[in-house]
View (cartoon, rainbow, N blue to C red):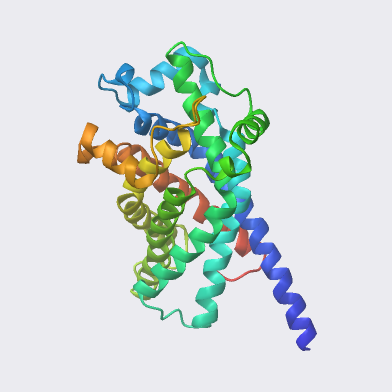
Length: 305
């Protein structure tokens, strides 16, 4: 009997990983253009050439003019690869730790859930950081093309090869510290807030465990995650985008140096560059992900998240 329970547990665990990956791919594909706009806005202001004000509308018009509709999906493939590792690890780990601490009634405090979410995000991000690096650089390439410059990479595998050849294996984890900091904050806000908000909505009879409850919860978690993570996201994006010059030097020595230089040159508000595109992506991303994931779980005979 115990062996059967272990077998069933492993099967359920494997199913959750597969369903999480599927839901993440659907959500990533649906919202990727907004992520591209956010990255472009966050990189704006790093050089004198981009000193004039810009906006999401201007970014979209430049991408469409130079690359067409497909330009809005520059870097999608490494983003999908990233989510094949990142999302299953953080979601499944969070649920495992939550259920391990409180198996049945989900009475964990919000702060406890926040810590569990942050830890799960850190583990997942360390594994997925190389794909995230390639995604950011390929997105930045579309911005270089709009300025008449030659793109650095012609595809994700070319990017991986060139980064390893010029910067070493360790180059794939460039910016991992701000990446991990952001992952902790995002998942602290996203997972804990979604979980807690969903229990609140259901327990207070605002809605049953359905699409309405999932939508309300994803909106609240998206706002929390964006507010907490946007400064770390800006630093992460700039750290990961920089490549060493021929002398081996970089614009930023570390994430703190990047933070100081960004605030000194562009002001404190620069840390929230891309806030609305970030939220505009996180909200729909979480809606598509959680609705898909919860529905897939229901079809597979698994309990609600």
